[in-house]
Amino acid sequence: MKYIEENNLDKIPGKHLGPGDRFCFKCHSGLDCFNRCCRNLNLFLYPYDVLRLSRCLQVTTGDFIDLYVDVVRREGHFFPEVLLRMAENDAHTCPFLTDAGCSVYPDRPDTCRTFPVEQGALFDGVSGRSSTVHFFRPPDFCMGQHEAQQWTAGTWARDQQAERYHDMTLRWAQIRRLFQNDPWGAEGPQGAKARMAFMAAYNMDAFREFLFGSSFLKRYRIKPDLRRKLKNSDSALLLFGFEWIQFFVWGMSSKQIRTNSHTRNSG
Image (cartoon, rainbow, N blue to C red; front, side, top):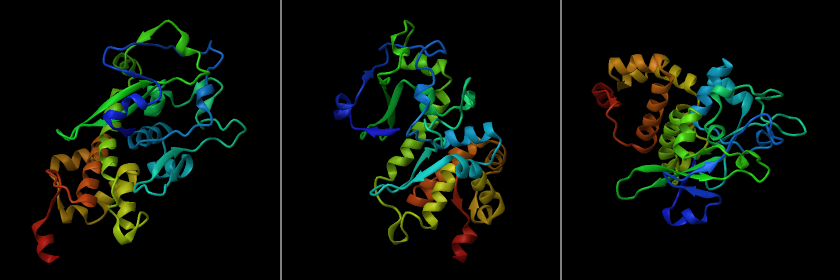
């Protein structure tokens, strides 16, 4: 999800969807284009996508990243992009595409759930808050756009059970926005600080091990009820990871993370 300036809304390809605006779409196996959209993609994965897919496939988040992800560091960008690695076949299909369709459909990424609607984040400089904007943008080959069934961005999100995904993606977009400026200094974007931030966003199993297997809980005060959630809830852990990035990388204040007084005194 990319940030969009309000004065650039009219320049975005596709039809901008306001709250009540409708579009026509229905995807089914009877369409000649069925599954054609699942190949040769630059499919960005957000942290909640990686978490859900790893659980679906019953692998650790670290193994999922190793097996299915390309981590791309672009010049001038201060946090890497995470893309789903396409299969090594002639069509460069999604690795989860089968003859019957998507093999991870209940846990498919946010971008796949939203298709053929694309999302962006609109930042309000006055309130400091972000909101989601939507654009109807099916590819030309998509026959589903000619079906009669009508949707709004909201009814489509509910039908695709995408609301939780959208919320997590917007939360991550707010963190990503901070990386418009370089926080790494002389250490660079591949240093220890950057690796910590990437782990806290994308590698939840390693992050949980860091929290409970290192001296973290001696150095920082975390309330007992939150500790229990972090042990047992992946979603709570991911949101804590977002907060940890803000605290650790940017020095932003946190109600959940406090430095122990004896750590400050000994340091």
